[in-house]
Amino acid sequence: MKNRGKLLEQLTGVDSSKLNYYVELKKRNQDVLKQNSRLEILQQLTRDINIDMSIGDIIERAFRKLPEALPCDFLALAKLTEGKLKLIAMAPRDFSDLGYIPKQSILWNAFRDKGATSYNPMLDPLCLAQGTKKHTEPLRSLVAAPLFERSSVTGLLLLGSTIDSAYARAELNFVQHLADQLAISMQNARLYKQVSRAKKEWEATFRAVTDPIFLIDTDYNVLLHNGQLPPGMSDAFNQAISNKCFAKLRGGTEPCQNCPIQEIKETGKPVFQQWHTPEGEFLELSYYPVFNEEKQLAAVTIIMKDVTKKLKMEAQLVQSAKMVALGVMAAGVAHELNSPMTVIIGTAQMLARDLQGEEDSERGEALSDIINCGLRCKRIIQNLLTFSRQDQAPFSPVDLNAEAERVLDMIQYQINRSQIAIFEHFDRDLPKINANGPQIQQVLTNFLINARDALTEVDGKEKVIEVSTSLRADGSRRWAVLSVTDNGIGIAPENVSKIFTPFYTSKEASKGTGLGLSVSLGIAESHHGDIEVESTLGQGSCFSLVLPVDESNDK
Image (cartoon, rainbow, N blue to C red; front, top):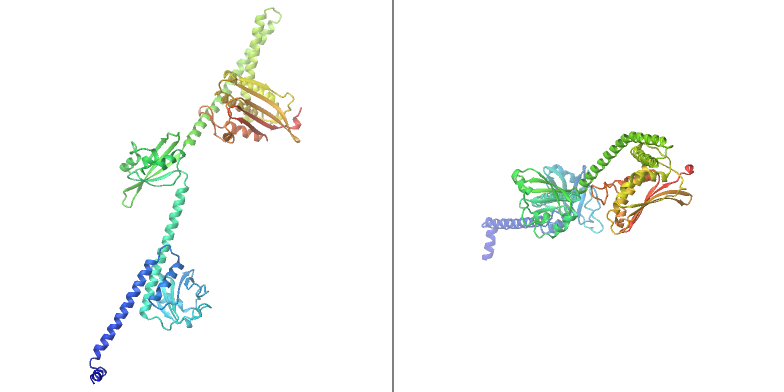
């Protein structure tokens, strides 16, 4: 009877307000717990998403977590591209083969509403409700939440369930929060990729620079370098225990005297230096200050440039210019000497003719010596003049033996003065060739000078240079060969391929420009010929100028 009375009180309204209060309180507690659970899932999902994840991976990760918070049998992301709404990721991945969302789909209304909205997929021509063979259960509830970038809608987050009316206002709010978080994650991922790509491009450019570059902080620590170290510096740089620049670059234990970094600290302006390394390299160093946002010195960039070859080339060019000036002066001197030599020879010949009837043999022999020496001097002067006009001379039939003799007349004294014997072996039956005589003389002169220099370092044996001409037959073609052979120091096998490179020389800067053989090869090729080299280190070398014989000039 007491229970029946209690029930009647409740049915008649007595204590009914208390019951409703507790029921409502219980429901609110359940809603709060559900909302807290969703927030925890949303927070955990945000933590799990990495900036280096793809959009597909982000959707997959979200799809695995969402069923804990609300009904979720389908999750997709559509991106607005050039006015079209394209499905770029979905889970399950094989749920639909739809590529673009049609313009007539009701999902486009989400762009106008700018908030999460639920739809009945059965009424949408998009046909996401149909499913596939693997997913036969159709979707009966669908939510579309816009993705914002600043204030513009750039896509949609789609979430579906096979349950009717699965999404109330609370679920819609949650989905919109999820869409906002995903939009932020995708923006971060895109920005991360842009920064990462820019960083890789900058690093690739930094390392592609062939000149060494270093970034040094204000405490002399090497922060960064591009790995392009001069050969003489790389070992010391890698073996240095300290990371200080003075240890890495110069092998020191304390900052260098007059350190440019210290000067930059005081002035804030770039500094330029030239450094002659112990290995013989000449380096130009440029120090540039790097300032932070507060306009304070944060680091110093050092750019090294190896100018060793440049300085050597400049020295060689200066030497070449001197040789050109000397050639011009020699031509002028030859012109000036030509007239007095003519007078000397003519006067001596007249005196010799007057003495023909007399018996004074001593005076006759003296005049004969004067005439012969004068003629020899005149011939040398004429060869110098011809040599100085070499660019003006056209191709014509040339006697290779005669050209060799002209060169020997000019240069034999210099070679003999070095205690070097010259032997001639000329093929007197050698046919004439079509060539530029002065240029042939230039090639032979270069061969002889190189042979003389190769013999200067030889001791303990007779120094010999042999000049020879010969005829070579190669099938139906014939070649005239002018060779200079010496028993000097020879050439190392690894250097034979370099000797025709412009400015390459094994001589000191004051003795050679490195241009002689390269110019000689150019002359040979302009004559449709070649230069052959045979050399044995320590035994000697043979340089041969090989030129084609013009049959029409064969006499």
